[in-house]
Length: 414
Image 1 (tube, rainbow, N blue to C red):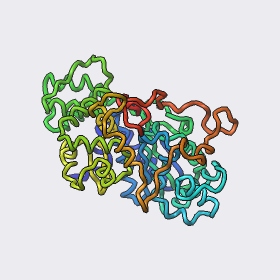
Image 2: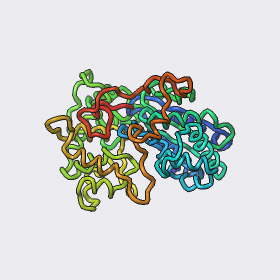
Image 3: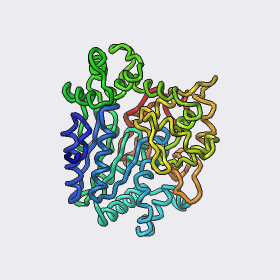
Image 4: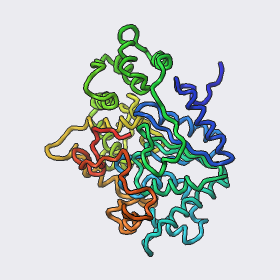
């Protein structure tokens, strides 16, 4: 039996997988960058997973960040995720660069006015030094949810990579760059699968439907890989597919399908998944379970794992798709008033506390004067990314969701 290659399971995305792998291989000798765009469920996250696995197999140092709605207003939150594995190397930076980096991430007290240029140079230096030891592959998913300050620093760094062995692969929902900081990157846009590729993907699913049900799945999915998989799952479970021309957009319909699966879980498991949805991808199980007031019995996660909604790796919870996280909020019981659930406040308060001995989570720019001074006034000539609010960020008030989230959970923002 022949051995599968990277991305062999991504029906209809062979060309895109090739571009991703080429970027990684070329990035071993000189800097390469790519921005992957497409609608929710088009395969962006799957491509990044292929990239991560290939990079690890070839010996590259993989740095990852996942955009998270609850951290989109926290200064340097995405940068914090990316650089976490490089923290030991920060000790070798020149003193003034190490100090500004540690201050930005809350590792050191504020002793001087903010110096944005020094932080940009510190991050660039840290990455360049890391790439001298072995090639670096930086992966960022849901970039449209990255905080403004992280995007500013990343834009600066990306424009200055040259011959360093660094590959940067970013993914964002939509068909255009989500922010001016990454607008200069080459685009790889994921469109719908061809009819033939969609049929191959459907046939590869367990107990794939036949006859009329098969036609309905393909018609309603319109070439969206995630829609094909989830509609096929709905057919297997006996759930109605609904009308192809229904009022809800496809992304919203998939989210509601995830919400229905979550509602079928035991109550305690639903509670745990909701608390995980309110946390960042960096939180460990102990913190989440402590916030939920549940004993350290990992069996409470089993029903969600068995349903394929989450994964448990080490001490962290991962969602199969960002829409599962959104579905957790949609499926949560409402309370009278503005809260999505009565557990929201203790959940977010407990999860936001930094644990002793760990790198603290970046604070909001509204609560830290150093971070407020970092921000350049919109009308300033020194503004790096312009004065417009980044695309994909909602200006709506944060109603009907836990306090850490900044927009409506019913409206996914890829």
